Image (cartoon, rainbow, N blue to C red; front, top):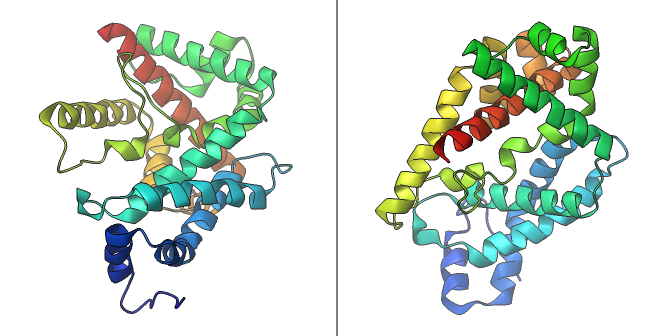
Amino acid sequence: MADIDNTTGPGHVWARYKATGDQSDRDQLIVYYAPLVKYVAGRIASGLPQNVDQSDLVSYGMFGLIDAITKFDPDRGFKFETYAIARIKGAVLDELRSIDWVPRSVRAKAKSVELAMSKLESELHRAPTDEEIAVELDITPSQLNTVYSQISSLGMVALDEMLSFGGGDSMSVGDTLADRREGPGGQYERVEMRQLLGAAINRMGDREKIVLTLYYYEGLTLAEIGKVLGVTESRVCQIHTKAVLQLRSRLQALEREVV
């Protein structure tokens, strides 16, 4: 089995695999796209405790890659890499959830911060500051930063976890990309989700907006974002965690309004 030539790309292998289902073609595609798994595992690992082995994340992600290659339809109008990254992340997160690696106390802290953010935003009609959140939780701003660090393992992947709105089927952020063949109902739901995410992000502070944009849309690592902002990588992680918690509380509030 010959490897795919990087100069010509995998197009001919995709066409042959989708036409015949030949396993050797599938194996070529797995080898060609394997770096995606390492990339995704590295980004997820940067927000997890050190006792989580990145090689384990790669193993989990390979199942997502194989599933993506099997199910991908090249005629649907978007890049395989976009589709695969969402599926790889999903496979990693599913496995992490199945082994329940996050202590209950950390989940409880995340929930309390989300509730405080939601309450304050409802009262203030804007995103609350760290100082206001700390007062609501009856802790100091320094203690709140410690909480952000503790729950960063939840927040680092939250935008790539499954989202739901209005009690309907769940979807990932990657699933909000348009599918040229879907009906008007599906297109409307995706447009609505993008609008909701955009509105929620626009209510955030400048640093939170910058971190989300650089991390999710520009593909920068936390360390690289830290250099842009002139802060430490751990501080970027805290800012990211706060931003994701704000997004989640805002979307949940919108869901309650709809219901």
